[in-house]
Amino acid sequence: MRKLAYSPTERHYMEEALFEADQAALIGEVPIGAVIVRDGQIIGRGHNLREHGNDATLHAEIRAIEEACAWLNSWRLNDCQLYVTIEPCLMCSGAIINARIPQVFYGARDPKAGAVDSLYEVLGDDRLNHTVTVYEGLMAKDAGERMVAFFKAARKRQKARKKARQAAKRAAAD
Ligand SMILES: [Zn+2]
Image 1: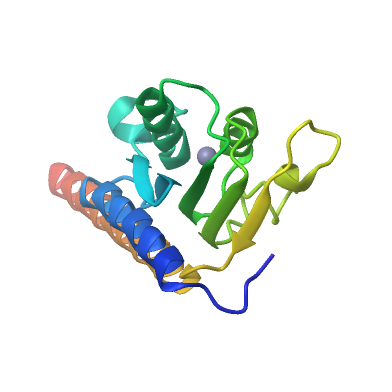
Image 2: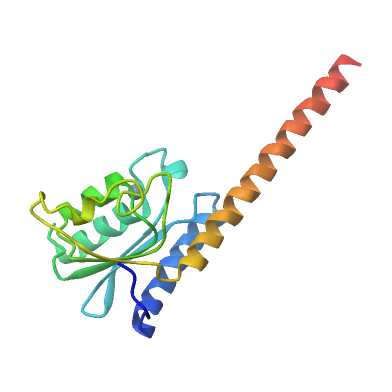
């Protein structure tokens, strides 16, 4: 669901998630960030670290959930809100349900992997024993722009590498 207007507090937490996304981008990871808030305090944060960790499960939301669970010393995050820059995937939606998080705010949709609105509606599926109230579109432009810039730069790097390889091949053939 889309709110007509988000509060300054909600925007503040999404800014923190965007900061995490930037930490990922700085080291060449897909720029997605997340924070978990309880009673006005951030108790978990994370950014995507899949490449550096060589681990398919190291998504921003999973890292933030792990940190929040460790902080609370509990697997139940039932008084918490999750803020994440991009629509959660299937794995992360599963983790959100397992952690019993009641509210999720996300920025931009992910048409290729999003499991909240785009491809599936996992968090609203009432066959599950826990459903989540979801707010989308919070600072979506900021989140989306980071993704576009990241993939544009990645394509550019790929092109440059290809060009260098072709030049090296030509030089070897001469
Ligand atoms: Zn995920």
